[in-house]
Image 1 (cartoon, one colour):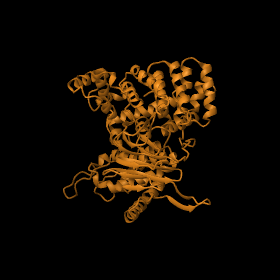
Image 2: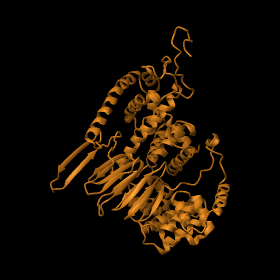
Image 3: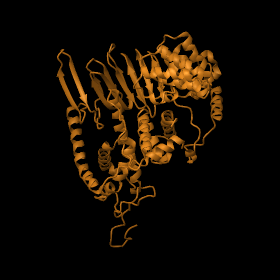
Image 4: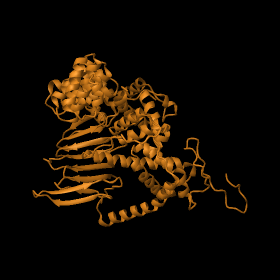
Length: 381
Length: 198
């Protein structure tokens, strides 16, 4: 347990929620009523055959300008969207695959949000939507701007496949844009963590040093048909980055097409198999040759992280984060990039540049979630 | 086992015995019931409601939602009672249900934030006995945990706050050990980013 975890854990021991005897008795009595309420709601939903949102108020009104608005408040945690298909006000549609399950479906005049709890679903989003259409599948958020795409929720990831149009896929610490024909598994798996004191319990199997694992994968790949081009791509999109790296090593980097999708994927393969130096070239290539591509800001941000976190080059990292902001001024990525730029200048010993970047951050993102870190690194405290 | 087995009495019923890691005894008498006994649910509720309330509070970070969560868990327990074979597994089973219920609430909260609903500030976290510094630390930590996936948040809290071992967490979260480790690492990364300079 590191120091942060220890301090938080110690403080959290004071978080008790004691229940007095009388309160326990009252809660016990309430259980039967709650169970009856649930049964009643299930009957209502079954009877009407639509996903009625329990504990939710639906208000339909005609606004003065003749615009019809539908407002839904307070999505209850008991929400179950039980239909297998939805058609929304603008004609966008959501279709659940067999075995799939929506957790919640919310349509408001400022957007549509759908939680995919299990399995797969297909979505057809009317082009030209003015408000977001979002699908949340576990740790992944898919935002669409008029497209047809599929999301399949797996255990800790989601597979996103785009038929037409573009989608932005976001997860903690990263995001990417997918175009027609693109597919991927997100979030990409992180590098294996170092064994900690907590790992003394028997694990699911004997642990292996990464080099032993990579060596075995390489040996396996020698037996495969190495003349099949692009297999590294399929392996990477399935999340098997070790295999993808081994295949790329076998077939040579010429397998990587000179276009942003492949370059970013190759960088991910290198980065996530603990070969960060080999991620730099494809990322730089995106910035040099495809700066106008919508994925270029992500390439710059990823380059910054590799340089800062993996290669110990904070000065170059700061420049990469600054590039991210030049290419993308408006999305949450820009805010993150500026915050990381402050940190990188700080770590490079450039306190004056860190301060200037921190002042920019305060001006551009006064309510930014990383303000505290930025003020500290930028010397503004 | 209570009472011994007398030839004219029914077979001894299984006994709910607090484990070492349970909360201190409330002083109530131990209950001797088997899962088929009509008072089994009530006995479980009195014995384990405080435990469910505690882990629910620590997962959600919101005191106001705890009692609702406790009731939801035991309504589920009522429905799922037939699945329970071993009364010694009650606590572990209730943890699994509590985690599931907490996850739904946390996900609904996240969904609401997509539409601009303000996130919790956690400035009013109830933590009697904690110093002011600790309360601020907790507020920062819970805000940081709001930014990671719900699954990562749950795994981290079960590990580091509840002190559960990885296997127990994997069972409660219905996932593999490797996934538990990955989720804990993801949450720790975020906490280190936000709090690492403290």
